[in-house]
Image 1: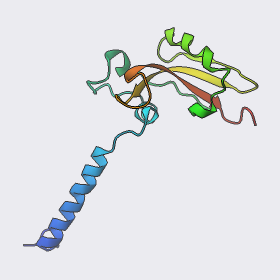
Image 2: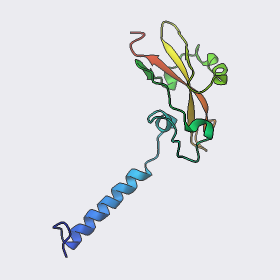
Image 3: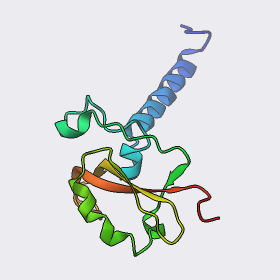
Length: 136
């Protein structure tokens, strides 16, 4: 019996390869909180594990800015961040520091339970963005 012009063995190999590919694609998990939240348009409104307060959150667009890595955050900025958490989701606060144009954004964050970064699960957090070329 031939399906799509392939022998039975070729068809089975093709179906097996497609099944493995689908499994790998569907089982890929986000690598970090950044991937899970900001690499998309925010938390999925259809994911029942996302608290209701975060389901409709869409991160604000930050044209000209790029997300800062934790290692690049100036020490002088860190004490300014905790008080910002009382602000609503989506709030943008400019934090000019040493000639750098830094913006703090209140966003929905997720850290894998049991992982090295806390608090675990969904929570309100501060993401920092820097204007590209601001200190160039």
